[in-house]
Amino acid sequence: MNKIFEEAHIGPLTLRNRTIRSAAFESMCPGHQPSQQLYDYHTSVARGGIGMTTVAYAAVTESGLSFDRQLVMCKDIIPGLRHLTDGIHKEGAAAGIQLGHCGNMSHKEICGCIPVSACTGFNMYSPTIVRGLRKEELPPLARKFGEAVNLAREAGFDSVELHCGHGYLIDQFLNPYFNHRKDEYGGSLENRMRFMTMCVEEAVKAAGSDMAVIAKMNMRDGLKKPGTTFEESIEIARRLQSLGVHAIVLSGGLVSATPMYVMRGEMPIQTMTHYMDKWWLKYGVRACGKMMVPTVDYQEAYFLEDALKFRQAMPDMPFIYVGGLVCGDKIKEVLSHGFEAVQMARSVLNEPDFVNKLKEDEHYRCGCRHSNYCIGRMYSIDMACHQHLPEDELPLKLRKEIARIEREQNPLKS
Image (cartoon, rainbow, N blue to C red; front, side, top):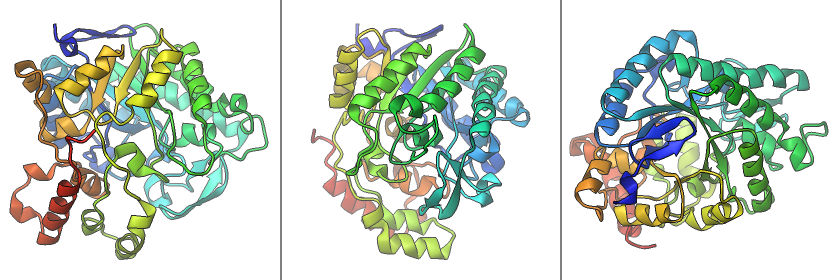
């Protein structure tokens, strides 16, 4: 049997196959509410054969919001989310939701307060002053993760994914690049893991025996200056295992410092700035974008080399692979190394029925051409593949940028 279509087991959850739609930000929740667009997209992916589709980043509290088209977990959105999970389940897929707190990656206009982090500082990407969290604020903030899990259960989700990577709040405590604290939450790795431990404990306790708990973490940050070391990342994974998470998604990069290490390829600056509404941000990114967001070469399964080291170090931990999967042959190769499942985003944005096509042709390659147009627009409008849009919706300058990047990004290279 093609290993892709074997059942996957994540704690109490059994998936119909080993494919998961990763929690890539959809930007489909205006007013922080689930929308018909969000419903239509995730149910189309479920209908397309995915084992589980994961609703992207939902803030556990309002201070954790990074965008104005993003979910925040509260009672008001439960009916809309229940409608969404019912639709996903009707199509035969499981429903997951990613929970997190963005920390310093926000602005008062979005989160309603001065953004918080492990330490006081300035976030040039917002740009905004950031306030370091006081010790007494940390336990109640950690409890928000448990409360969010309970809300996810009420909304009908089968699993939660705790975001512990990519430079969001939990990672801002884990990573010495951000964390310069002098108290028991800074310094040694044991201290830097303290806040993560509190958050995960609350989530695991709330999940009980009937919900799967997945954690997403960094293997490497993609930084030239010291951040979390690779060896420390393995220790973080061991801590997550000891805390009772059922699976770990192995990722990398910091959205505020090394975004293309996360996503790979070139950021389409013309596309990104075309959809921005703040004139000063538009011209600032046009002037400095190439320097702020340098290109990181794309290759298929770009995190696999590092992920295999985690697989070797922790042979009894269920790991989920993510990063650069667009064809059946590479997915089968990854699964042959003992990963419990694989996550994909651009494949099922480009073709929501990608998994069903793999049933028909185990060598099938999706039509994504890696222009990263979807990334360039998702922070301002929504996540969309340019191949789905009428040509007259794309100005000539964007069509030229897309064509150039696609020429330079050969997806057959590895």
